[in-house]
Length: 257
Image (tube, rainbow, N blue to C red; front, side, top):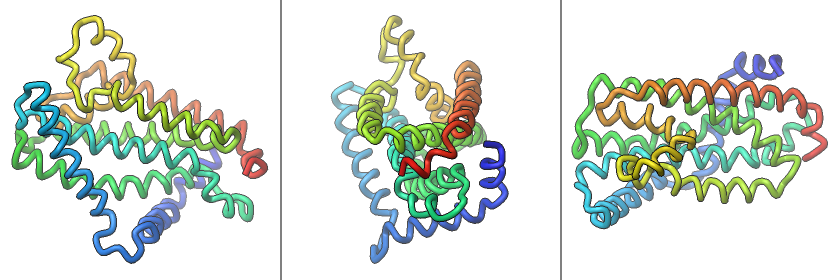
């Protein structure tokens, strides 16, 4: 498993170039390319911000940056985990014909989702600049949160890729879990709207802590230390689990395809 990881990290240009190729192929003959995703996300954020701020009786200038950051990062999370379920299946022709690093396949998927995320980040930039509190040095802490989130995603992607390759029905379960998780994660609603009982239970949602260390710095607040510690712990646990799962299944994946 360490050799698989080492092989992926030794040749980063391979999966980075291939991820860029995937983006070009996905939006072939499209004038705007990934910016179509940016436009649709911007329209969604704008319309839902007006709707929810009206229903919840919130200041739209305060709610729009909050929801915008949450929606853009959620799109990144859900896209990565959804594509990871078929990560090994969609590249079965490579796995069957050559010796390939399974970690590099998931890094390829992560890289192309990061490219799309960077296009969508333009929305956050304009919202924070013209509607939100503006940019400060505190926003740099969100980079740490983004790195931890990405490491957790690629580790979880390896696990999901292996499990969904062996049991194809798991993919539909994951999609339903992601749908439910969207409503149980503070993306459209804020934690300060909850009473003490619900606030206690919502802390068991790992995504809450990742959003705390990413969104709060962008909004000009220092990240919560508790959320930072929990996020680091989750990242380490997922990494160990992914390496353990890969070590047990790496010689069987090609036969499951």
